[in-house]
Length: 252
Image (cartoon, rainbow, N blue to C red; front, side, top):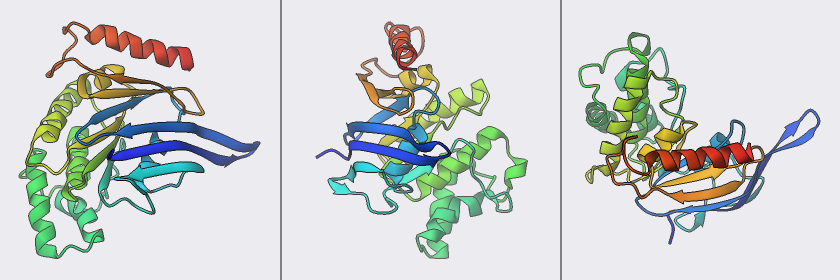
């Protein structure tokens, strides 16, 4: 049984001129242990798709199945990392990381223990009492990642998590994300990441899903067979990058 299955999902929104279709008849599966990247033109519904997988939004039609069951409400085995960090500016690093745990009813002592573990995992040990205004962009995204990991999800959803960071910070965080995903002691063994950086998708993912322009439809499901760790000097890296770019350009 697939971990996740999207079956002919569509999503439309009311619009001044009628109904605006954002996603149309989108189907794919995610198997246990996979890292899947999703790419496509701006406005093709990638972020909307993540929200439906997380249960924040329902499809207009079709089904989102998790472990064979249709998602009904928030999927507590998922966590979402946002592009914009989405931190509470009046809360410390530790308090931001504990937010999801508090919402799930964990006792204060357990919240503090678990938050400390994941703050350390993302390299922020010593910054527990700092506030977002005192952190760099990369450190803020580490807080967002620690907050998501602290609820110990089986499926981590990431919405362009590194796009607002400088190049060197993004490189470092991509490497650390792979390390966390491959760490057998971590509960997260499945990642779906939306990105508009094709090289990032080729570097990180087991599979790359390519969506067409709005309404988003699946136009390619590409397996990345390059050995890790990957870089642009690898044979086939640029060829796959060019192939993905061509697919997006054709369907934009």
